[in-house]
Length: 65
Image (tube, rainbow, N blue to C red):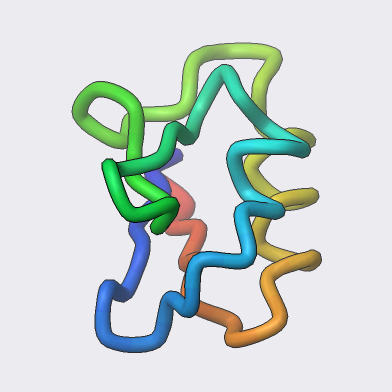
């Protein structure tokens, strides 16, 4: 499983890194960024789906492997 943020849609609400800090971080302006290469480690799948479901702009995509 992999996560991706569409930078054009992200408005910097920060829900992704607040809800799932193991998968997301923020840049210097508060916009969401993927931690690492975007691969979701085993056991973190619920966190990926939680972040995607709570993004107001639907800027987070979760891709199943």
